[in-house]
Amino acid sequence: MEQQSATSTKSDTYPYQDMLDKALTYYYADDLDQARALSDELLRIAPQEHMPLQLAGVIARSQKRLPESAELLKQALRYAPDAQSAAACWFSLGKTLREAGDLHQAEEALRRALHINPSVCDYATELAQIYADGWKLDLAIETLKKAINRHPGDSAPCAILASILVTYGRHQDALIVFDLALARNPSDPYIHLSRGTTLKVLGRFSEAQHEFTEALRLKPMIEAYSHLAQLKKFNVDSPETQTILKQWDPEGTAPLKVRIDAGFALARIYDKAGGYPTAFQYLQDANRLKRADIEFSIKDYQDMSDGIMALFTPDFLARFSGKSNSNLAPIFVLGMPRSGTTLTEQMLASHSQVQGGGELPSITRVAKDLGNTWESRGNLAPGSDEMVAQDLQQAAARYTDMASHLWRKRPRFTDKMPMNFLYIGIIHLLFPNARIIFCHRNPVATCLSCYQILFGAGNVLYSYDLAELGQVYKIHERIMAHWRKVLPGRVLEVEYEHLVGHPETGIRRMLEFCDLEFESACLDFHTLNRPIATASLVQVRKPIYKEAINHWENYQPFLGPLFDGLGINPASNESP
Image (cartoon, rainbow, N blue to C red):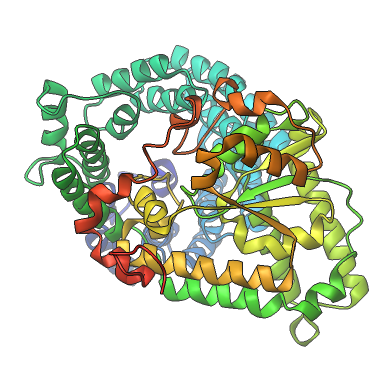
């Protein structure tokens, strides 16, 4: 919470200071209901004072009441007694607008805050992150560099710049900036944790282990054990495992996120030791805790998928195909998470003409912006042929700009965001020369692999409940059947099990589809030194191994909800 902004005009003479302090105490203790109760009482007493209004707005944001938060903060601005207080209100409002997805207005609010009071580092770092959200990388870097120079003792702008560079795939540059952050604050466990994850992505596993261990030394209750369990083998009776068990203990003092991290770590430790019933118990309990802490609606996901299929009819595609004049030829690798997309991309990225792009959020952002534009036209949606042609050309140009760091290096590049299978229609319209490769794997193996992973914040939200996983997989099958029907021959389908069993045949087929000559380096994919920021980052740095194909069978007795969600017979593992 923006502590300075909520108390920006704090005064010993303020008549309701005790109530304000008590509300803030509840807020910082994450007791939002009590904080709101006191805040509401303050508003009844002093409805036209900026401090109660701003505090109420900040609490409303924390409770996801975003429209109410924005309105309260706008009222607070009207009663701000001085420039410093106004800047703090603009900052709080910008954070709310950013969370609501209104990046344009959020940017304007933060620009105002920073212009009024450039001495507050938080204003600069928040503005930079809004720039990064909008893919304004140059502005984000420039803003953070100024903050780094202005605040030589503060590690925050360094750490945030490094994290933004990671998001944009510039992991080596990020390491340099993480080092600068640690030079300013060597005792910050979260910087060590972030640096460790970056080293892990780069395949520097021993260095990553050191950073995770250091983060835990500095702060034993930090979410680092699931990372360590991915990189090293723990003995189930070791002191380290006993330490993780203490973090997991529901009677202990570990925060929820640390407990969840410990549960996933223990599940992996026992899985590697062959203790599958114990592993699954930890896995099930950790997933249950995680699922209760996130918002996901299977109905909303179904409605979104139905809307995509209803829009992209044969007539719609025929009407707007050829409207984009882009010559860009990305190779899109997509499919359910854990379906073999990382292995497929790693093979392709080993080719001398292909730059590995990793998981780019670009298509998702472009597609959502297009959808909002078309929906805004009401009865005219999506618009005339001329309007849609312009929309598509602008969207293609935006994506091209986002991917410039890739196509400037090599003639072809990969975009391996698994969930792009939702946007195959958009990809087809934007890039006539694109190649689309769809990865498929045994549905039970795919879903269980997702269930075993603690994904990053905001990613793969449906993976923490077996029944929902099965339902999402069925939706994914429906939408892929739709693309086969409306875009026949547009997508190359790759079976993970066949690719693992016959790698040369598989890679030759993919390269031919992409109009690339065969190169033997694609079979030595595990030697390629490039960032890999997926759950498969350890496996794809090793030669092909087949042990994972049937690993799910160790858990078959526990997967009833998944089988129900998939609608399959556990005895045959085949769809009806």
